[in-house]
Amino acid sequence: MSDNVGLSTPRGSGTSGYVQRNLAHVRPRDRAAPYPKDFDSMRHRQRQPDKGILEHERKREVEVKVFELRDRLEDEGVDEDEIDSQCDKLRKELLDKMNRGGNESKKGLKMHQVHELADAKIKESERLRKALKIDKDYEEGSHWRRQEERLKKALERDADRDEDNRDGQRRSRSPRPS
Image 1: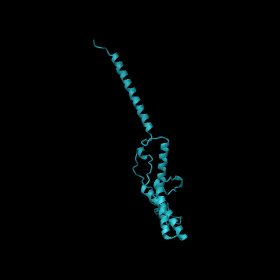
Image 2 (image 1 turned 30 degrees about the horizontal axis):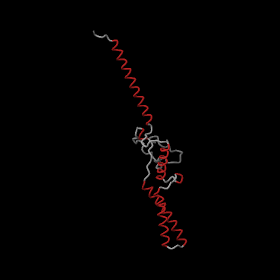
Image 3 (image 1 turned 120 degrees about the vertical axis):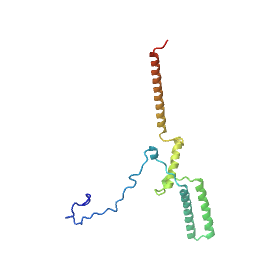
Image 4 (image 1 turned 30 degrees about the vertical axis):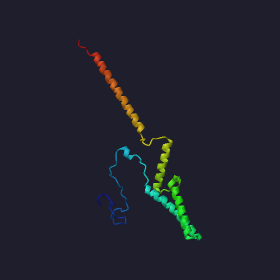
């Protein structure tokens, strides 16, 4: 055998000793991908929902309700003109309600509704930000940066004072020419 692969000898194994490549093995992707070293790029960024998909989903829900009404009225044997007028009326009501901004909760959403979940999460974060009175332009960790800057300035001031004190002491020790 070569490269220490397989059996050292096929005797007694009931096989020919031929070694095949495992075609079912899934190789890991991006093993040598250059990942960013800075922590800012690794921070969590809120995924923005696609407005077009959200709008399409809302309109689709309206049309589903209109179709259910149409189906029910057709089963009852209502006149076609009456069905059209009631469907148009329901469609207008639902679209007006949708445009006014119906209050949707995150609880009714399913896992496959990614854009709706992202939109609900953004709204929830916005409500929390307002409740805690956090500015929109607030950066995470900015408090620590300001504290570090203050500490650096204080250390620089102390170093300058020490340097001034040393200079003052040297001048007082040196003989003055007369």
